Length: 151
Length: 88
Image 1 (tube, each protein chain N blue to C red):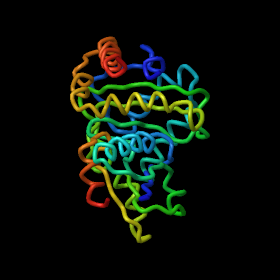
Image 2: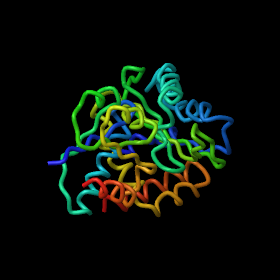
Image 3: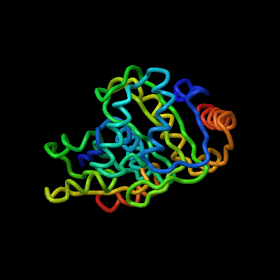
Image 4: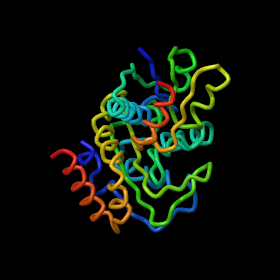
């Protein structure tokens, strides 16, 4: 399900971002453009990080920007942004991969998150993702790694 | 049975993934516990033996006298095992 949500149009690789706020905005842009979310949803995520701290940074190098469905989700969706140069989140946490999550309810996204957790708990998988140079190689890497988990 | 409550900002994303990893860690430790996840505001009113989550979230529960376990890398089964084992 992770691969179905992360279509090629929703995967971006860029050189760098000026701020963690900008990286969240950029990560969510494909979902804004395909009407999965409203602009308020992105604003709410940034507000919540300011309020609660960088709890969306789930491990070194990886963030999962998300908030509650009622903040502005039209349909369950995910996008992925990779930064070649890390962006610094509060508490000096460096991030290069942003898995942006929009969940329309409490359950529709859980299968995708389960796959993501399985992907990220294997320590050798992250370097492969970080070494992908463009959106096509990143998608291919994801497909291979998730295929490896499921087989 | 020990009750572990996994807490995140809105009880929807990271806490679900962390709950999965806590269950995996318990299995590897050969220990049993009742594990569930919730958001920070609900956690304040919910009873559990251990409250586990990212430092910036669960630290907001510290003055309530609850047992708190903070995790740096939510995707590291070894870290979760080590930190939980001390409390089980």
